[in-house]
Amino acid sequence: MSLLFLATTHRVAPGLLTWRAWQALRSASRVLAAADNPQLPYVREAEVRVEVMAPDAQALVTAATDETGPVVWIASPDGDEELMRAVGAHVVGPSVAAEPLELEVLHGSYDLPGARLLDLVSVMDTLRRECPWDRKQTHASLAPYLIEEADEVLDTIESGDLSALREELGDVLLQVAFHSVVASERTDETAFAIDDVAAAIVDKLVRRHPHVFGSITADSAEQVSANWEDIKAAERAAKNGAETSIFDGVPMGQPALALAAQLQRRAARAAAPQELFTAGRGLAAQLFALVGRARDEGIDLETELRGAAREFRDRVESWARDASPDAR
Image 1 (cartoon, rainbow, N blue to C red):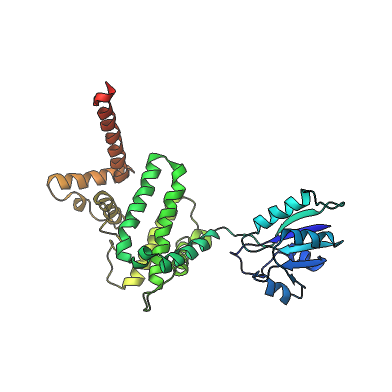
Image 2 (cartoon, one colour; image 1 turned 90 degrees about the vertical axis):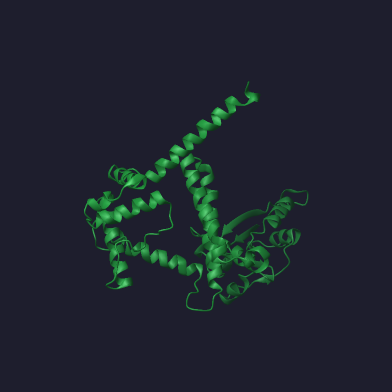
């Protein structure tokens, strides 16, 4: 006597079961399922006889003990964990049969990597429909949160608090999902959904990694970077036609040090004359030149300055604690 719980994931389409699951269904003495189980029509379409019954622990135990062969219960998408515990209590309880009932869980489908992203899409769609705050948001109203969440990720990395990184990255991922659901509601040619966002970045990654997905050879990180920039330049030329700028795609709204460093990198790749890097007078020109010096030495001045600011904060906080009357 045996009772097999056939568990599936709702993130895989009903009917897509493993070979072992189909084998268990076809060889079972009885196959049982609730009337609303999404697998039901597909299992029946495969000519497996399924009996509909309510999810009741005592009834399942009785059905299994009355059969000499295995009985399969097709679990609901949530796994029927409470039902499984109740069945287990019956099996080990005072009503146990003379011959012990074997219980087994068979997973008929499995989540693929990234499957929980489907849950995020579903939750975001629900919030957009049912939450008053989420319903009123626009790309413009959400923009400050994207910047804030990205800054929090950077702060977490710089502070070394890697245990908190997962949550902070989740907050950034939420912004991507949120902007995508807002965009999907438009009815003109600017509309897109999160699948379009994913497809675009997949296409870009494949296109910009010909040494992985194509026939180009790149034996070093420097070669990969050079190929990447060449491909980006070709993409810009194809997008903008003959009228292109070496600074196309540089976001001018980014922090000033990062902006100066990116502009200088682009200019250096274009072999711009050195006097263009050092032109100008005053403190701003000196600071711009310092960015160039840091670039030549492989230093990210934005990161270095943030680190110096963090150290300054720690020194001042330590001084304030020592100077506090409570510390005396």
